[in-house]
Every structure is written in structure tokens, then in C-alpha cells.
Length: 293
Image 1 (cartoon, rainbow, N blue to C red):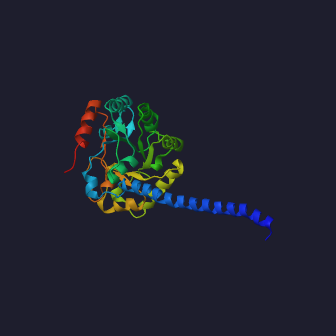
Image 2: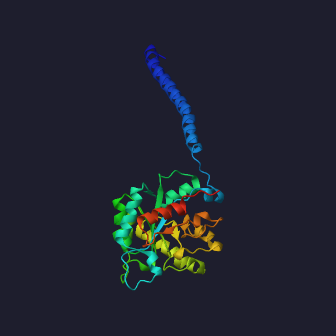
Image 3: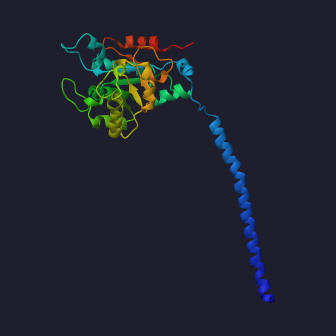
């Protein structure tokens, strides 16, 4: 090799050596960073209780108040005495919701309740859930408007046969249901035509459960994972099928919860039209502010 070539080779060798040295150091730094990232992920996982609670634990948690409303309108002469429990005058409904806000209640939605019951997730102070059954349009025009005034969200259990229907009682349209979902409320199932769950046949799991779920998901673009029993009536031997058909939880009325399926028998109370705001406050505390031994 000539002297000229030898001289030229030294800088090249130096550059090559420095490049390899830099690459090796970079590789070592990457190896050093890997355990740090892994450790961080482990800490995050270990710091959260991801194991679902068993039924006994779920039943032992303090119950969250859940209110149920149907028609928000004034009584008329043709209303039966029984119907009066399902009807609350607009001005009284507004007074009751104002009382909840003034009393420091915070509305929650089913996903929050589910995570609390199953994983022990924290809830806001004085949580309460406000639910509506049967798709009545006044739940949108009066119910939703009133809830928004106080920063509350609601749960709307939709009976799909009545969507868009008009008559003595008007029912919500697809557009109104979609708006409720878009505004952050929960849209949930209440069967196709209010058939008693205890009388379900095999075919009803398609017509009363699967098809309504599909329709509501098409309207809202969101998963439908919660269910309310018509008349509040459940049936212990078929509760397991609700999970098989995609529901995370289901709501009864004021009857006893099922010890084997507490997530599918979550209690609610109706806010009757005859109640004053003070009556409602007393009823909430009497019905829900207890702990199980």
C-alpha cells in the first residue's frame, strides 16, 4: 500500500471505529431503558385491582340510589289510580330534581355503577342514578331538559316498538334518542313491547332482546349493555342468559336482589307523583343508605 493510501485510510478507520463505538453505546442505552419501561407498566398494573368481585362482595357494597320515572305529565280524568304512581307532574319533577342538586347529589351512569360494584371503583360524593322507562317523549322534552339544567345525566330504557309513535302519549323519535346518546346519556334496553321477562319463550330472546339491542345500537352508534325488566319482574332461572346476550347488568324495581346474580337485579325505586321533594329525600335514605352485614 502506498504512503498516500495509508494516510487516507487512518481517518476512515477512525470514523468507522467511532461509528461502531457510538452504535454500541446506543444499544447499551436501549437495553438499560427496557427494564425501566417494564417496571413502570408492572407498577401500574399492580396498583389497580383488576380482579372482579364475587357475588358476596358485590352484595355487601353500599347500594347506590337509583330512581325510576315513567310519564312526566299532569294527571287526566281517565288515568287509573294505579297509573298515578307512574305519572309525575312536570312542576313536581322539576322540584324533585332541584332538591337532588341542592342536596349535593351527583348523577352517575351504569358504567360507573358497574365498575364500582365489580372493581370497587370510586364514585362521586352522594351518587345517584336517574332512570326513565318506556320511551315517553316527555322524558326528552322535560326530563332531559331539567337534568341538563343541573348538570345531570340520565339512563333511558327504551321500548323499541313505540319509537316515533304518536297518540294519547307521544314517544321519542330516533333523532331524539340519538341526541340523548350524543349528549352523554345512556341508552339501554326495555324489550320490544314490554313483555314480562318471566314469561319469555325461546323466541323472545330474539324478538325482545337481540333485535331491540341491534336497533338501538344502529340508532346511537354505541353498545347497548344494560337492561330494565318490564314491571320490574325478573326470573331467577333465566337471569344467566342476560349475560349471554351481551348485558353487563340489569335493573329491577324495589324487590329483593338475587344472591347469585346481584348485577342483574340492581334495585330501583319509583318516584311517585304524590311525593313531595321531602318525601323523596326520605325515601332515598330509607331505601338505600344501608350497608349489608
